[in-house]
Image 1 (cartoon, rainbow, N blue to C red):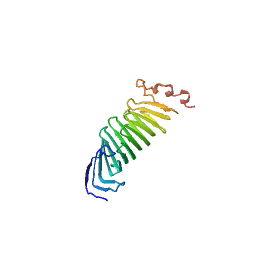
Image 2: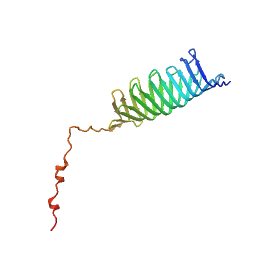
Image 3: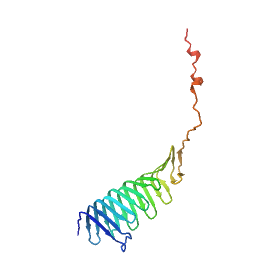
Image 4: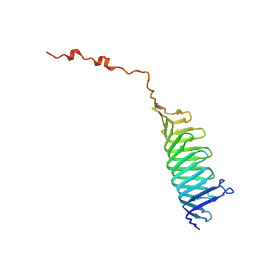
Amino acid sequence: MRIPLAVAILVINLAPLQAADPFEFHGDRLMSTFTKGQERTELSGNAQITSGDLVMKADTIELRGNGFRYVTCTGNVVVKDSKKNLLLMADSMVYDRTLKLSRFSGRCEIDDPDQEVTVRAGLFDYDENADTTTLQSGVRIFKGDLVCRSDFAIYNRKADTLDMTGLPVVNKKTDEFHAGSIHVDLKTEDVLLDGRVSGTITPPPDKNKKPSDDSNSDDSKPDDATSKETP
């Protein structure tokens, strides 16, 4: 049985069910299936769902499973973690409301203003309970003077650390570091390199050094022997 609604604003308390958090969702259009074992609700047009500390917005949001445990967001996904003041964006997202685990894919970005960290990747898994994010594919992390790049990384927000593998590179101002794995303390911006270590460190310019006056050097004086015309 399918029930279309032009505008839907529903609040469902699912505390007795598998997912502990009650949730609220709304959108311009809703389509629901209540066949046993195939329960499914799809929201489209200004779709939004609030579950626990997360507010999720997308072009389309689908809820399915026992107690609407699983949430799938597609198109212009924006997720706000109100408790941690995190903003997560992607092309698509799948969320388990019971385990509080989510996977973001596509053009993904995390904006963490409290930690002053910005993260970009092609795929990441966010664990609300552990406060960690596992990043994959074209990982980029920006923090102060640090620019970090790798194929794989784990961002531990609680510890304020970053562990990178897969051709990791860290740039700090004019310095560049390479290694098999790199650990970064984002609070102190200290960098620990391990395995196949290499790098380039550019000393800062000496502000007390005076420029040399080339006009008084011997090279600037004409050679009398060569300057005279041959009679």
